[in-house]
Length: 367
Image (cartoon, rainbow, N blue to C red; front, side):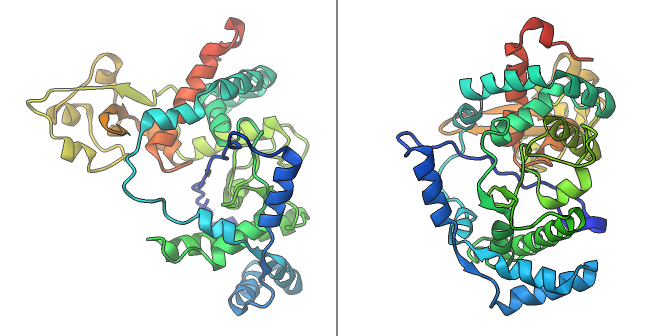
């Protein structure tokens, strides 16, 4: 994800980004898999759904869009049962495992693709770091985790995904009403954007959540944070690496990225003073000063002792083994605005770092 909230003047984008899945071992040839996917992605149009057409009427009136055009586009959107199933809550009881999660994203395929992406786009990465203050390795980490640098951007029609989640979000989800409202906002943003850019809404493809391009931006994030970084007077997050790099950097800057600040510090514990419940209560939100964190039993060393901003104790569970802990900074929290998960943020950080270390020495330099 990112990635995202509502419409053009109301956008406060928080990208719900869901990484694309690799094909399972023993998968059918690409053409057969594609044919099967397209068959699975056919559904029932919303043309006869009163709630969907009422939504279309409201969007047209609210945003000054042609009524018949909005009705036609919403009516041609299809309800995809597979999209609704993919949004159902994950089974409970399975312990989280950072090491397993990490292994899904830090692998030879992503590392090799990341090195090529960095080498081919070094100028744009350096320019973005200078302009927005976001390190190249963080941008590289995001694009690698999201889509393996454009290799897996999704093949669902964005119109169908957003409509399905707007009008038929799984009712057994604990936040079904809230999430359905969110996706109605994204569908509205998508239609408004397509109309303003003269794009056929039936053409763009993306993830089952409606995220698009190499960085998997949701429509509202595209509108608010998208940057024409190659100067061709359009924003292309599927085909222009420059636009992708500029847009991701702009996104992080918009959420308060602090240039030069680390994302986290290592920690250990003083068992005699440790108040783990209090330390974990704020979750990933930076809340504690260095002094207050130390008073609750966290041992910080080196540069961490000079940190001026708030910190959060980040817990990464490792299945049945002891968890991994770090002190997350405000920049760690900014990464979670792309996807609300500490595991995701750490995967981005570590993938970017591994790619940087794998780069030829002359390519590691940052401005």
